[in-house]
Length: 125
Image (cartoon, helix red, strand yellow):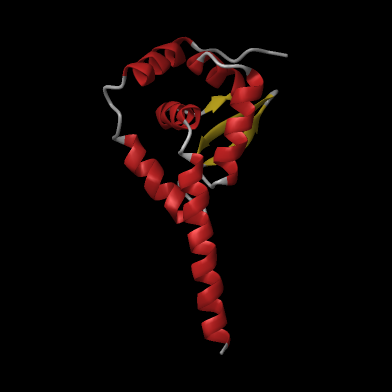
């Protein structure tokens, strides 16, 4: 009986993980953020510059991606630096990030984001 309960809980959590990951990718801004972070790790101010978006919009979407299991963060002096979490507990997030890595290569918006990222710098507070 304990094994059956564990399987049911595991399957329920797996479905919730998949739903959370797919919902996180249902927004253009979050897809753009992931594509930028697939290039290199970034702080919020670099993501703001690369996507030409506000701090609140960048932070809100980073939080959603992190909650869905796509991102990890680390402190680097004054900054919190975000990167793809390839060891995430959400295996669906890893699979979807891998799929995204080689997708949308010739998208004009993503090409512009990548160009702006090459000029983005960490800004002090």
